[in-house]
Image (tube, rainbow over all chains, first blue to last red; front, side, top):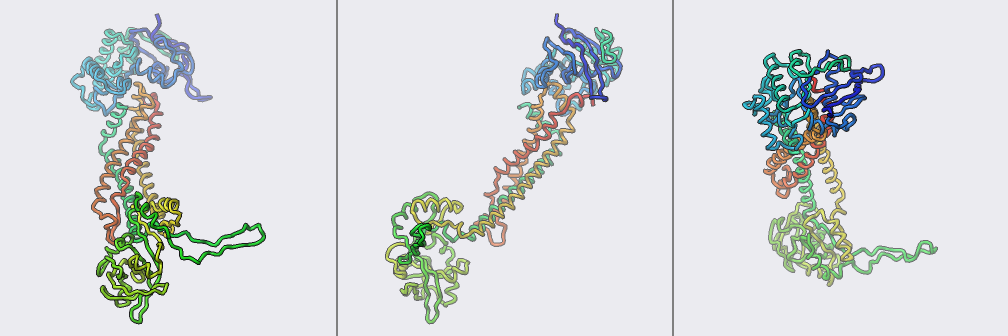
Length: 226
Length: 401
């Protein structure tokens, strides 16, 4: 069976000459369909860089990056942008909602980018997603009017809008209190179980990592345990 | 594009004070543009009207019979035909082309004339005059004598004459009195002063006299033909074009008013250039204002731009959002500025009704459409730099902030 994501011998360097820093040093990793995986490792180990490359926001210096059977290692910016919109969702530590938009408008955003407008079916799905994350009563609230936990739940709903095969979450609970963090993690686990969406969650929190079925540890730019 | 428009509009309305000030700044620039257009245009109309309102726009005369070489230079001998003075330069075939000229589109009035010099004699006084013989119903065809009449009647009889006020004052002549007019052909006629006019140009008020065409034939001993045909156009700016057409059609010498008024034209051009410079500065101000405001907005919204890019917004989409903002600012500012300009200029009298010393702005020459179009284009151009800067935002560098 083909892996959802397959990266091989991934190298990423920053800078040139004496200032060159090699962050990823030949990393291999696979993500399967319906995985719920935690990405662990000390600061500076290359977790964020790996997540950025997997999210097609950055290209590796060398190695190969295949997703959904498609080699996207050297795809053009335009192709990667379209690929990202259709197949990858993001949840960031600081939620990064659009502050001038309502919760529903934020959720619908990826679909509106795809279709050039907010379609009726997208608005319906956006409302359903907000209902699912327990925020149907905050649908028309602007992002600035929501609490930290609510914002993160809106961010999760947004990440799921285009029904992506992969959701990358970078410290999704890092900015939340324990109760909100638990709620968010339960929500992610539920979506993974019911919809089969693959999640890769970068975290330092061992409880979050323990809640995942897989733990991928990156040390010094390489995968050391899986 | 529809969604890009929504985001652009949301960005603009998210900070109403800032956007309002920006649009107000654009509107002021457009107002200055429109005011300058109306002022420069109105001033030009006023000057042209004052200077050229009473002169012909095109004058048809007989082509001059200049001296010419009869043999080529290389022949060793120089054989020259002298300028012919044996015959008076008159339009002999005027009757043939006058109806065709009168029927042309853009011709306001055609006045066939016989002109010559003479003296007004009254007692022992003699005053030189330039005599113009016109058709009785066309006394006011070129210079509006009827409107400038200070005494008597503009209707001319074959035994009547219209004279200027200064000439009348100098000779002590009033309406109804008889004067003797002696032409440079030594023909003399007694004429009744039908009316006295005051055009406001000293040379005319002191030296001009109008008589009928038939009186002029007698006075200047010209049983056939005309001295010239004066033509007034609907649009005096078309004088050069009409002069070329008339010359080609009639074979006569056609002189547009522009040939004798080069200094006025230079003055008007200089005035228009000054106005254009001020208008250009107004546009540059608009462009700089819009560009700086959008650049600030780009910087402030870098994280949001990064998120848009992360979720699949193309660079083109980001460019469109910022260019649309610039377009909306330009259009709104342009329309508001143009509206305010029209409202502010409307109470001013039109140049044709302007009083001396007043501000001769012409609300019709505000160039409203041009102002809006140039502002919109300027704002779009101004937004390209910030838009490109926005499109270059690296999502990775801003998402982590």
